[in-house]
Amino acid sequence: MNNNQNSFNLLMSAIVGGIAGGLVVYFSDEKRREKIMGKFDQAIDEGKEKGLDLKEKIDKSIMNSRQNLAKKIRQVENRVAQS
Image (cartoon, rainbow, N blue to C red; front, top):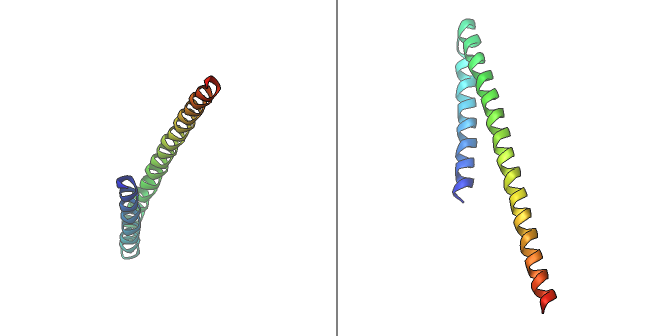
């Protein structure tokens, strides 16, 4: 549950930050806009990288869960076969 709350907080922070950033860009001059867009692009790249890392961790977790489940099934099958 805590992980879901952290994900929700991260999503909300991104949305609020995007809105705030959009307003700053809208009301700033060209030089500032370029600087902000550069930082925005950097933040997007970092977000993509973190998203890929998270996907990798989730994929590993799913694989480990599948392996553990298969192991448990084999144990039960062995017990049933021994009965």
